[in-house]
Amino acid sequence: MNRNSRRGLCLVLSAPSGAGKSSVGRALLEREPELRLSVSATTRAPRPGEQEGVHYFFRSLQQFEAMEASGEMLEAANVFGRRYGTPRAPVQEALDAGRDVLFDIDWQGHLLLRRALPGDVVSVFLLPPSLEELERRLHGRGQDSPEEIARRMQASRDEISHWADFDHVLVNHDFHRTVTEVRAVLHAARTTGARQPWLPNFIDTLLRP
Ligand code: GDP
Ligand code: ADP
Ligand code: 5GP
Image 1 (tube, rainbow, N blue to C red):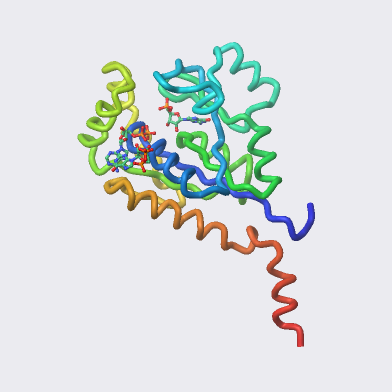
Image 2 (tube, helix red, strand yellow):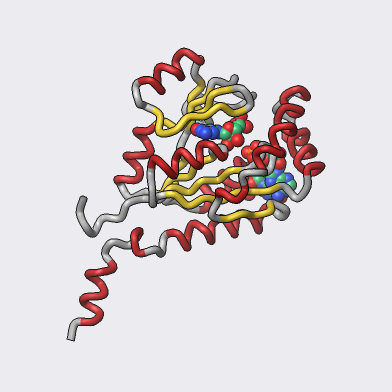
């Protein structure tokens, strides 16, 4: 790799379902033109309005397992009894081209991604202001059945217990404030030495007598 070319970074957003990571992620992508979304594969059914290849790659369990077996997945996990995973090729291509990639993945995916791409990951965990508010948001979204909402509320305690694995933790109380804070994390992560490989040359010219 050219010593001056910047490798992209991975920004992971995780949260219990309903805390707001899709909404925050969407707002982030609108405001950060250099950021690309990693589109996951899943075995769950599409919700109304969800499009193949935009929100997810919707796959049968058999297709999903075939992708996994052939090494096409960067990470894969069981979430709410279904399979979710990150296709490898688009992420590798974006990072090699110097583009930053946003991931909306669960806590297991976060740990697996860190292992797969050491040094490339910065992560944010979103908390709801309260469990009552979390349930209100899941109902308010109006996209999951009461049984599915009960399953997600059950899982939320376990999800929240993994908060300490993350680099940054935010309470998603005020939406716009949360978006601003996640952008601040992204901007700060772009200033490390590893993300600015041209720095040694620049320092040389700066200090040249
Ligand atoms: P929109 O895409 O036309 O709705 O544009 P907005 O700028 O209003 O919002 C961008 C995204 O953030 C959308 O996905 C909204 O659902 C979400 N959003 C913005 N503000 C709020 C808020 O205060 N609460 C919630 N729940 N979602 C918000
Ligand atoms: P997730 O992707 O984490 O499951 P969503 O982004 O779908 O969550 O958000 C769940 C619901 O909560 C949506 O209806 C969204 O509009 C709403 N929501 C997200 N953030 C906030 C917030 N800060 N205040 C109020 N409602 C919010
Ligand atoms: P939803 O069905 O609400 O879109 O997502 C359910 C959960 O699966 C969320 O916690 C989300 O972060 C997680 N998820 C989505 N895509 C992936 C993925 O590619 N890998 C992993 N590990 N989790 C994912």
